[in-house]
Image (cartoon, rainbow, N blue to C red):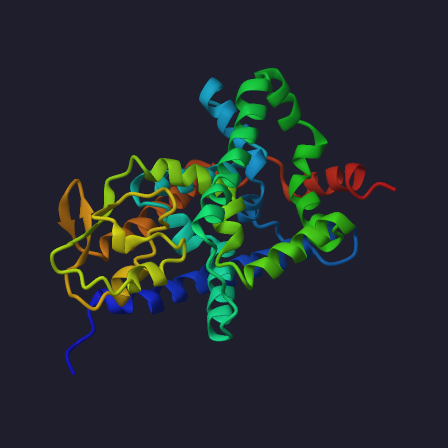
Length: 329
């Protein structure tokens, strides 16, 4: 039996990487939960994990505006801004590699998709419905950008970022999951239920983060090229695409919906028909996921070495703020 090519290993490699990041996210959440209990004097001390700030996307947008206008890095939640900048860089340099290889929500969506595929529950939306739904996440992104970058003055941004509400934003996000309102619970359950039927519903139609990274990816160096002369038109590439892009109809793919997962190359029966291209030059497939990992961990190492990972407020200071403004009766 001939050795398997890298493209054939992509689905297993991607799943392994996604599960690794998802496992880390779950461990981080568990650790933060115990830190939260400590701030309530309900458990022993556990250090607050800075990476929990990745769940503060609105705060990251505020931090980005302040960084652009003043060159001041967020001192309260620096890890959140670091991860946000890393995701933007990945979008620009490695397609939506953050979505396709790192994002824990993407990992869960991938697992749900596989479950639904095995139980034959997936329903492919018709084009007349799919296309307008794709615009929802861009409308959400436009709303947040308008509210933060256009309507909110710099002084208001600075004031909010120094407020107790912002300083305890990570704890409030935890409470959102632990004690959701009835409306939030209904919406969450509805999205989960729809995701069992419609492939990657949140990622494809509602995630403004993914919309921003997709716009960045449009200007990036990578694209997918299809050799129409050798293509068998089996449509396996389109069927495997988590974004349901009609790859079999495109000679060159730079769609902002592409997450750079390379799943299509794994199912293509014609060797070399689908190839990764950088500035119109054929590129090894392994280069894209390698760039995803190298860029992401480069930002992490930079933040650790430059003091942009841990906030300036120590855990004991945060405990006092939590008790006065989050746990107060």
